[in-house]
Image 1 (cartoon, rainbow, N blue to C red):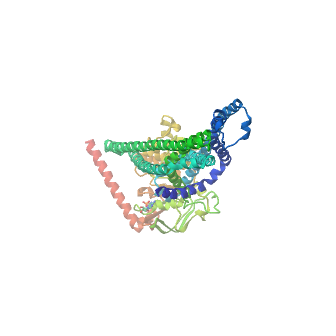
Image 2: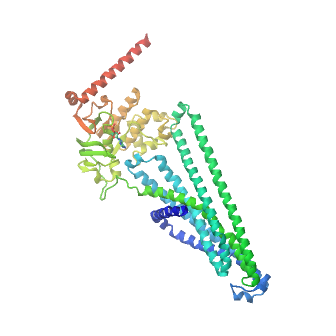
Image 3: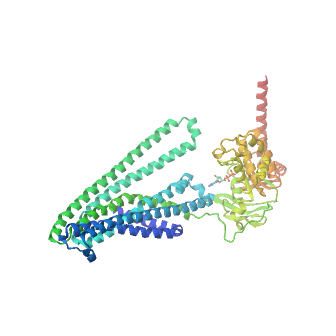
Amino acid sequence: MQALEQAKTTLPGLWRIVQKFLPQIRKQRALLTVSFLALLAETLMRLLEPWPLKFIFDRIILPGFRVDAAGLPWLNGLNPMTLLTVLALALVAIAFLRGAAAYSSTAGMAIAATHVMTDIRGNLYSHLQRLSLGFHNKAKSGDLITRVTYDIERLREVTVVAALPLFTNLLTLVGMLGVMFWLNWELALISMAIFPIFLLSTVRISKKIQKVARKQRKREGAMAAVAAEAMGAIKVVQALSLEDMLERSFANQNQESLKEGAQAQRLSAGLERTVEVLVAIATALVLWRGVQLVLQGAVTPGDLLVFTTYLKVAFKPMRQLAKYTGQISKATASGERIVDLLDTIPDVRDLRGATDAPPFRGAVRFERVTFAYENKDILQGLNFKVQPGQHVALVGPSGGGKSTLVSLLLRFYDPMEGKILIDGHDLREYKLNSLRQQISIVLQDSVLFATSIRENIAYGNLNASEDEIIAAAKLANAHDFILKLPQGYDTVLAERGATLSGGQRQRIAIARAAVRKSPIVILDEPTTGLDNASEQAVSEALQRLTQGRTTFLISHNLKAVEQADQILYLEGGQILERGTHSELMAQDNKYAHLYRLQTVHERALQTLELEKGKTHAA
Ligand code: ADP
């Protein structure tokens, strides 16, 4: 019953996967057709294998028993020695042809499967990169990576290692049963007598194997999670001296996984032996009745030989069925995970009729823009206008919606209501790439990649020349410190740029933004967390970067926003105050209050430093 249940869930899943992958499979049509024909030839050769021996028995060694069901009259005409030579050669020829066919079908299918999977992996990766942030915020990156690597690999492996041989063997089984019934239905029925017992024991044991395997998979997943988490936070782990504790927990899981692995192998080895005994019983039964039939002249000794040989081979696919059904249903699960991803449609995508954006002048307008994350209202009917080249500062308490506002400009998300216009045109009229290419960003913790500094800068503009890269680095106050690094611009950074100081990372990020030469710049807390000296170098670089470009600056440091052409004070997703610094100070409201608070706080800090300096001096 459970097997039936499994088939019910596996088969539609398989169908869905095959349908989804059909375009990639079609591309391999020629190879697949050839492989399939080779597979048929292989099956035929397997069926023919015992036949030369049968003829040797029936026609040469024991010609007295001649009641040949498979009468090939022309064989009778040959003299025994010629016949023997022909049959001996046939034996070799069959083995050779079978080998050649098996090679072609296995290699052909394996190559086709690899092509298909490589294609799908490429599609999956580019699809993943294009899925919107709304999706990525919810997804776990570890899980996505597993789908691109592990799930695809498992699907490929099972197709080649399990599904294909299983199919070949099933085809052989059907062929053999056909031949057996043709030779003698009574013996054929006897051969199948052990079938029910065989099926029962196989189903029982394979169920156990599957249970253990599933447990093991789950445990391996948990181990990977523990390891990934510990490696990701190795600093904290070492600082808190958690190594021993985590090691023990990992070792326990590891040990359990070993036990389960051994158990699965034991079960599977046991199953193989059971099958061997069952096959021996079937062979004994066939011989017992078969010899009687031979003596009665109903079948020839050669026929009996064919039966016993087939029996040995015929049960192999059944054994494999037990071994592989588990694997195939697991691979189906993998395949479905991949299809699920491919079926996810990005919520932000190019609309039909979207065109490449012309070079922007940089006028930006928000018109009644409303936005919510998952039913949580964030921005509520925002209206504001920015002239080309103007600097806008976004200030206000955390959670006010400042980062959300700029991510709408980049079309990481689309507004629920209202629209955002650049130079008078709705953002959605343009292709995503052409829009984003004209906006550069510097974030609080800019991400650098584990590659050379030159490439990290060039990621801002893949067509940038060497001179442009160096000019951008100079503008960003980064050129000098880069030259002091051991390999200069060729210095390869650690993951996320961990080998550089925060200020250096920021300056490379600024160079990356500068090389883009975009008319619109977004700065999200670009100097937060830096010490005074780095802050100065970074601020200087930023000033040069934003010169003459429409700039959105998010900052908690109100000193940095004083010069802005326009300051928007955001709280609870609404613009509560707007104007220049002096206008807002004159209004003497929230902004002015915050500003004074910060100034007082800063003065207190400065006094404190001074006092410290004095006591030191004394
Ligand atoms: P700010 O930049 O002013 O600190 P944000 O725009 O980052 O504000 O966040 C505004 C609100 O939106 C916050 O309450 C935050 O918790 C919520 N928020 C931010 N990003 C997400 C997200 N991806 N999914 C759900 N809520 C989010």
